[in-house]
Length: 616
Image (tube, rainbow, N blue to C red; front, side, top):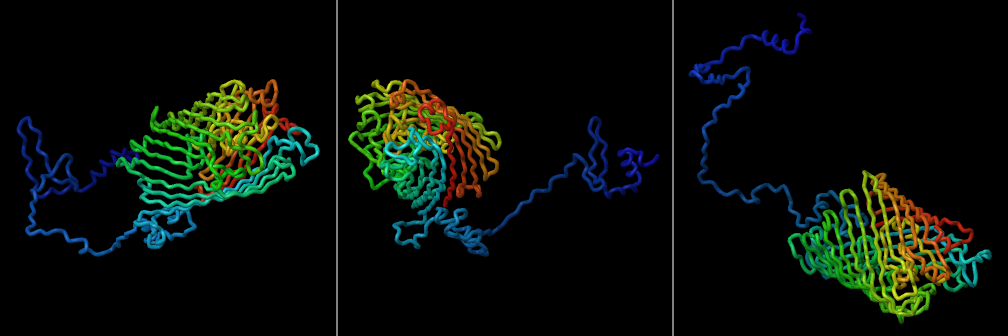
């Protein structure tokens, strides 16, 4: 039979048959015949260099060892020295020659970024002792170029264009703004593991802005002044002292106080109060940071008209904000953080007459009786942020109540009773996030009764429904005819509050309210490049206030469609260099057209935002 015809088993047997016979092992133990009923004895002989299966050799005899006169191990000094101890653990990387510090480099280890403590010997003029003081410097350059169109009123006394004889004229304008923000902080403590014991922080912001519009009496109250403006201002955005009272657990739950000009955001998205103001804040955590609390108060500073920065050289406003809130993680369900908020806004500016830097009255607002107002309004709110399963969720709900001492429609006291709710849900699928948004702010249905039901915030700056990429959130729409120097909405806000200014005006609860439904998506094309799109539909909740101010019998509710898209590029995949280009359009609805019929009636307004942010 040919070998190729054999099976593998047959080939193996044939190969073994050709091997020479194995020699018998020397002195093999005799095989003992077993007793009847017992298994045969196992032959432990070695076959072909292999141990028989299931055979275990007997264990060797136990070994005992004695060490008479043993001594202690020698001290570390007795061993060769091949390592050098480094007293300053923060400078270990540089001591090994792996990194060379450069003061201008924010990406690697840097003393000016708080990566390692200050050497007290090098700064004897600082009143510090110990090796746990850190110095942090940050700097931001924020450049904005913004062409846009919106309904621009024609000046009553004069105009730039002879054919601008209607209420609204040409609608194209542009803004160029450059901001430089520089901040420094001195803090004590091992901040990587626990809150700092002491912190001093100062942040200054300088803004230069240029605006050009096609009509007069838009930028200045005097009709003789031109329709373009260059302005600059320096504001103090932070100047506070933070003191750490104590730690209350091994996980560094703590109690602290912060005094001075400081940032504060009353809820997760900035719907009610999001600003840098002068105040006192007590805050801390419990239960391994699962419970957090804040309480304190703010005395609101005046703002510069054209930059929106804090004007600390002016007397603060007679406007006070007192608050208390509490956060709880995994409440009401796991992965959801719940917050309860109570805020009291006590305004005492009835006797205050304030003119802004461009000559326009801002307090009291030039609406109705033109008389000053005092009011007390209380906000009770519930806010949530987290997820339910794979759905990311953020929501806010507020009820505002109190008393307006002098309603500008009736010159009589009026109760305040208004509502607000907002919800944004998103779903992540790989590199895409899909978003749905909804918001509701109640409007005033009867401006001449003794109840004001139009919801207004204290100082909103929401990150919601496209944020400042959105046309409606980004642009301010002037309410010409029925209200002088009044805007329907405020810049970087969503509420239709009919205020003279978000920065310098008072809250107004005689307003038409808001309804918003939106959808959007974020596309992370690469870690450095993101595309976003958003579509919102907006309505007035109730147009009774607008009808009274315009002396019109009816005004439709539809504001229109707000469509926007944005591209964000981060060349280093960090927030140190960010470029953004966005475009938005408002396709006006019947209500907007009724209020703002511009020259040529374009029915579509646009906003382009080119933004570069450089951060150190």
